[in-house]
Length: 541
Image 1 (cartoon, rainbow, N blue to C red):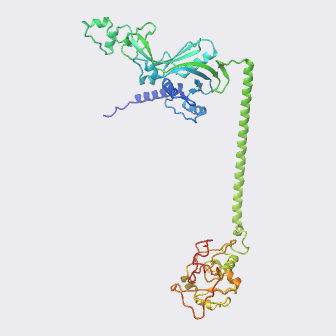
Image 2: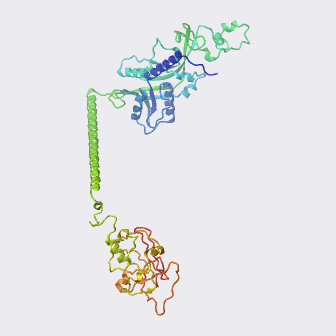
Image 3: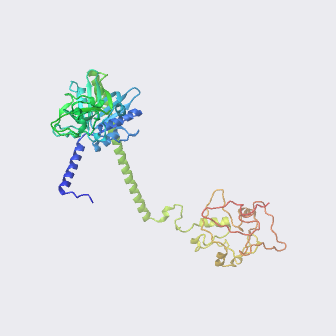
């Protein structure tokens, strides 16, 4: 069967209870307990025990890193509603405990003279009374000997009272009081004793034997003749139950309390059992603010009025210097931001102006090296002339596609068709001999080269195809050797009687000509890609 449905009144009451709980939780003080700097293993355990004392209104699982500063904790304290810091520090000689009141102070610094952990205190008890239900409610604070005259005593009492939620004695629920924190001040030694107790209420006015029957713990009655002996005499009782209750811990309950026999308007005894931790504290100083203000009280250092005035003047000068530096820094930041915005605005205006100029002017303005009457897509005559001089023949139509409509120079010969393997004089080439094949057949025989614009490099000459006249031949006046073989037949043709090649000088063989003397047209891989000479064949002996 499913859960029974709630009525409208039950839902309203539950919503109202949740709202009251949230308001109550936000109105009570909260705390952070952590350490600063390096601490030992025992001190870390003491921090965990103090967090257990401050439950449930404390951060029991607070994680602290080395890079965290006090400003980091102050920054998160406001949104979380944290009102107090308990900070442990350790020096080579002492252990200090600081109480911070947020957000404006004051700060109390104590020296921890002695301390005992929860496990140390509980191990000395025969029967400890500590369970998890006790830590669901805040402890009851008891201050002793804090009514004496003295500014530092009043500050301490106010600090401790504000660390725990206040209690309205007329509306308090006694079942919510399960623990007690006692702070005792000794005016002679100026030492504070910090104790933590578990609270238990038991009825009085009846015999211990009857109490055991009420608690369903029946004693051994084998030696008794009548049950009346159990009610009259106290026998077979443990040593822990032999404690006598008196007027010092007996009171009349104003309302019923948890436990058998604790009825309203009945006499009951309040028993305390220490559960730890235990600390012995000594006040060192009281400061304004969060550990950065004036020292209001110091236990070991006493200053006269003149010394206090000098210290205040020095501190005021430091604060003024700090404020002046802060104002200067803010002014510098604002000035840099203004300069940055002005530079950005100026840059955007320049970009817009350049775009307008580019749209309104010709594209020739982008390349100042071009001639005025030359178009952007057309190759220059200097490149074509340089190709003719270096290669020794006319460039292909595909190499310079825009130059096909131009008139070629009459002194330069057109590209020859199929040529026989023979040697011609330097100036014996006729246009009729070069008209044997058409352009379409020539494109089918030779691979189509990639468009390439040769660069004029200092100290470096591009590779020449076979059959081209090298600069050394032109200077020496030697005849140009041109070889043309059909792509289908690559074998060496026999020479006519009496015709042979003259022995060339070393290094005079044209680039790209192999051992067989066949003409191989170079394949250009891309713009500016050249191969070193001498890899297509062996060097002549």
